[in-house]
Length: 219
Image (cartoon, rainbow, N blue to C red; front, side):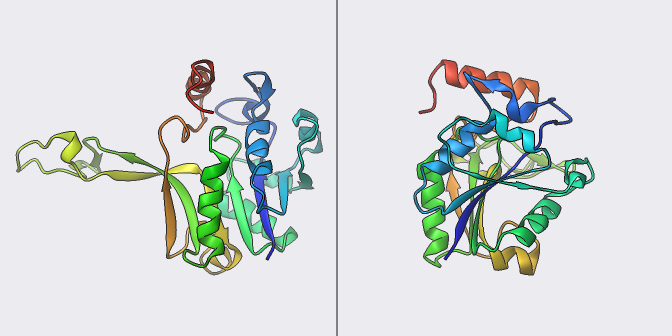
């Protein structure tokens, strides 16, 4: 069974220019997830999937990975997640894909391994990281997890809402080939805290990541 780490990347980003190679701590951001995947022994190869070969210049020496050049259209704002996964699977025959986005630098190797073992065992067809939130939530103009007709609950008594962390997804090849999704019908959900699950989209997110490192809130 072939298992690959899948790291889609690009040099430029709309909301935060050159985000993936921006210095976080003392290294470009892309290095964090490659380091993480290098520590997961069950992964056979780590694929950097980008349209610009020059991105490898930002990856530290000693890290194991393979670069595969992807079509430039995947760098456009019109490209969807399904597009780059589909293009990747045309070039890679792995049975299990470990998708880890560059924007989630603090996901732990132990988290990846736990998710991966559940998929390898056949217990689950996919896995993803999630964050649990107990707050008063609204959706389309109405309360989502509490009622305005009942006494206001304490937040600790509310039913939690799970949000996909959006950085880590592990799935069997057939899950995507049959559903065009990263999540199958029987996923394993790994809860992570706000620090490990921190995802970087904006400059503010990046500044928070710098504070997380500075305060040593992740290991």
